[in-house]
Each structure stands twice: as structure tokens, then as C-alpha cells.
Image (cartoon, rainbow, N blue to C red; front, side, top):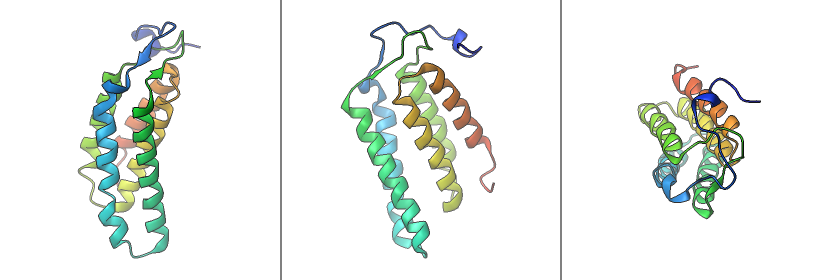
Length: 145
């Protein structure tokens, strides 16, 4: 069922894709974000935090890899999402996460990014729009909550 948000975007037709090459900026940022966890992992004072950071790092690397394997086929009849839309959401997330020093707060925001990119890979324009709003809400939450 289409929502008000999907009506503002064109509808995907058979064969419409999010081109993997167009997602290069998001791919690069996921790898950058993953690498930014190296130091916190090395400095973690408890095993639970180190494990959580390691799992986030693995997820980021896996998603980055998935973005380079093949273009994402959009589901016909749903919102036609472009690489530019995904890159814009990634850029917005980057601007928020880059300002967060507290590792627990960064973990929460990075988790929201992982959820968003995971949904992007489904090709469901409706789900991607919903996930983008969820990501935006997560990014707007104060970092201490």
C-alpha cells in the first residue's frame, strides 16, 4: 500500500535499479565508519563493549561489500529510490555521527545506519522510505538517550 511519502516520488518500473556505482559514496563511508571503530575496540575496557563494537564493524564491512556486488533491483510499483537519496541519507548520518564522542552513543547511531542500509538492500522503496524516516528520528535523538 502506497503512503503519502511514496506519492512524491516516481514509481519503480520493472528493471529499475539503484546502481551500485552510484552508491560509491555510501560504500566508502561505511568502510570509513568501520575503520573508525578500530581504536575504540583496542581501547575497550570490557569484553562486552569490545564484542559489540566488533559486531558493528563486521556488519558495516559486510554491508559495504554487499553494496559493491550488484546493483539493487527496486520492487516494481513502489517508490523509485535513487542512489542520490541513499547517499544523502548517509551524508546526513555521517554529519551527526562524526560529532559524537561517547562510544555508547555512537554505537546506537551506527546501529541505526546498519538497519537502514540493510533495508536499502531489499529494494523495497516503501520500506526504504520508512527506514529513512526511522534513521532520521534516531539521528535526531539526543546522543545521551
